[in-house]
Length: 429
Image 1: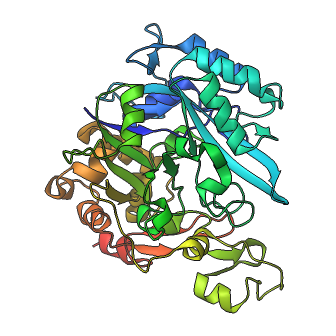
Image 2: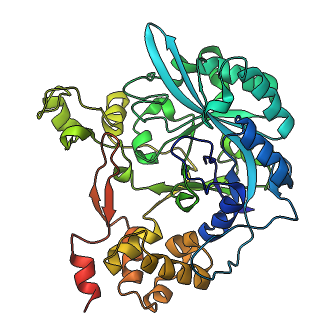
């Protein structure tokens, strides 16, 4: 079965997360986006775990669905009846591990996945002796990443760990401010149990494939969304049996000996849109690429203080290739701009306006889902819509012909289809 999965999501109990990020709302937006499987996020939080137990029931092995008495909660300002069923859920959590190793403070975020509530409860019981799980949906624990992996392997048979957004400067496996230079350095004797890495919004597979040491790892992409409307800005396309254990096996062996790709594709941000792609200093409004950053010795030319060294610089620091090398059977890559952002550019209004939302839902109603429109719908059908240039714009995105302004030091970048003003001027003709 071919299915789309977004496996990094947060609940209302995580810091800086929308209060609408509850299960019924996530289920509703899964139907709008066109995703079939969502991580629950935050099962370590006691209140969220209780809510998950009250609202979900077992479906396929290791997956869950809304209980029969519950329905998706759209809470939209417009009438809308989606054609897709709501997604299944897989129990997931993100742990912020902050600890000292080799004389340096390490801050690494890790994702964990388990097939049942009993496993989640055993993990929570152990982690609650280390820190306060109720303080945040993404708990901060003084726990070595290697030791977290050991807990997962011991308490959740069948469960697994994936290092999260591995290049983010402040909180990740390879982060420039607090990370390591290799998976082995981080996870030590348990490194063999790490088989997948989440690339994060500020990098894409091509960047990661500049590093031969990562050849043995499956690269996955997820939204890390803090509100339901941000689901699936990154995701994974599987082609395997629809259950937890087949999904795990697909991550361990994304392409089998016959050439069948169990992980068929990843759905990506253009990495420049990520908020840590380039180097820079947000307080001074200064951003630069790695070449210029090296000339400046990593110092902001405005204030003289150290810049935040971004993902591209860090990738190039560890790279041992001049161009990316993809393993045989590597997943396809779809780099996309969210449909609401495309509509906002073409209509000349903000992405969060009622004008954009009304047209967005109208298109979803007609074509089935956002990802169907962005990836599958024939351009000829999109050309017939009453939004000028919609078909042309989506065709250009599919060809990666976009305008890019890189994010830096916590500021999202911007990706546009047309040069400044061009799309709107053409649309008015």
